[in-house]
Length: 167
Image 1 (cartoon, rainbow, N blue to C red):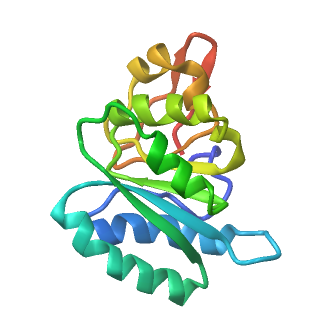
Image 2 (tube, helix red, strand yellow):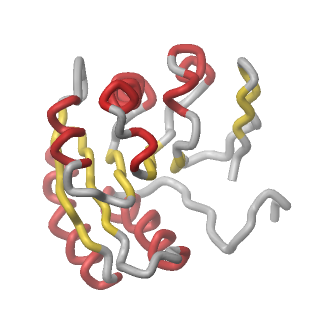
Image 3 (cartoon, rainbow, N blue to C red):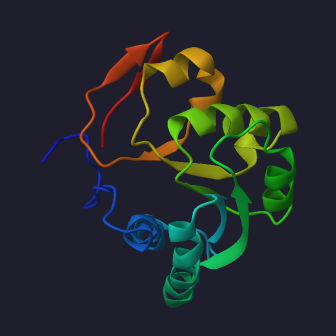
């Protein structure tokens, strides 16, 4: 086991959308230190697999005593997420989990979050299955502090002074 790991969790990607989100939710539930139950908002890519998964995700959240504050749906090809981010962050989530928001899509979402002044108000988790140095090159300030859920072991990435370690 890598000495970088600080707990018994390796959050990998999924066989199904519910497994993917479920691994994050289980990790959140088992590591949460807040005095109130955690609140999660979901920013979801519009796709039938994810629409049908969300009722199961909500059931699992109830089982884990995690509050779902909202879901916002966006197309794969994004231009702006101001409306969706404003609606989600107005509900004061502790986390925003981005379901199948790819690295390319996150290059729109995270700069929008900075422009709206909400990036540092919540924690962010993104599926990083196509994350690489290009995201750092395009928006280095936007990716700082984001949690990435990945399906493969990543080599450390060092670019423009940022150092990203695999789990």
